[in-house]
Image (cartoon, rainbow, N blue to C red; front, top):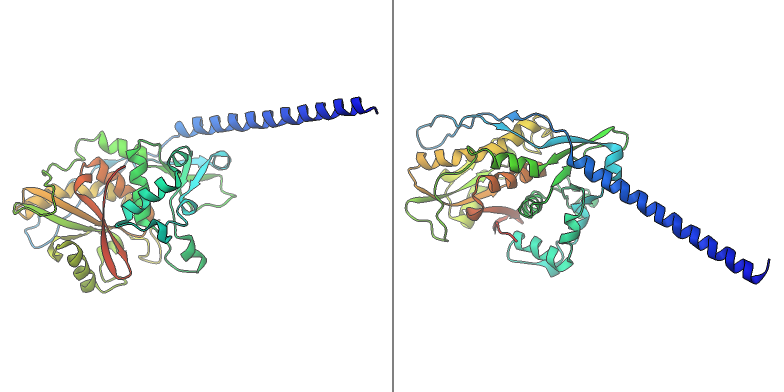
Amino acid sequence: MSFAAAQKVAQIQKQLELAQQQLELARKQEEMVDVKKYISSLNYAPRVVSGEIYLTGPFPSPPPCPSNSIDLGASTVPMNVFRMARTCDFSLVFNDLWNAEFNEADLFTRVKNFIAKKGIWQEILSYDLYILPIHLGKKAAGKKVCDLPNISFIITYMMLKADAQFIVVDPIHKPTDSHVRVTNFTRALRSLQDDFKCRVHTPLQHGLVCADDAFKYVFYQRAQGNLDRDRNGEAIQQRITEETGILPANMLRIKLSPGKYDDGRSCYNEFVKSCAYVLHELSCVDTFAKCINKRRCNRIHFVLDEFSAYAAFTAVAIIAYGIESVSSLLCYHNGHYSEAPISFP
């Protein structure tokens, strides 16, 4: 074969390779379009009825807050569609969040500045599906508890405030499963926002000093509201009081059934019931204000259960009920609680 002929053959081979690459790219783009189209038209589970909410405390017991019909945004995605989808695992995204360079005054600011310094926000928004984070370092070390509920809350809040379609994959699945369970937190939020019963009507009082006619309190969601489950209850109350100035009488213990590490890690047993309860629990704020004879709400602190799904649904509820400006997380670390005020962006 002459040199000119060899060059011609090489040129044709390169053209074929380029054409194959273009075909492969077109195929992948077609698959991506199909995935987005499929995910945008998922069939969702029927609405569920949350239980009534009963308030007990150092006051006459009020009538229960009525139950409500709740859309959890629950659906399934076929395994083949899930494999084609672009899925963002936040465990990998936030793997180095705890590096000293990202130290900030509070956890909310830390997460926001981490994302800004990395320049990854637009990339995060581009994914089809998401997996809530765990602490990979603790998991590798064989630790029993490696959950990151506060991070799950913060990223859910940020995604929803950005008006993103935030669909989260249940991490408990096998490659041989026909489907994976997903939760569309954006759908759950829109459903609550469309329900005008899901609002806090008690006026909000902003500022660091709680006025005489206002109140502040703690939603203690973890461990079925049991402060003594794996820690000293009195010590926990004391630490919360030290951080917030809130006395035990204003610490509402939320009895999710169960929390992640209650009853042998059986949180999936009544998952639907508990998630509906999380989306409904803020209905008791107005009743609580009347019980303690206060006119305004100054601050609501949340202590989250380890189960990240509960944390994400709590973010949904806080936005829907319109209490973001007076809400904050109480984050437990090294024996102390620290406040993380909710803010966006």
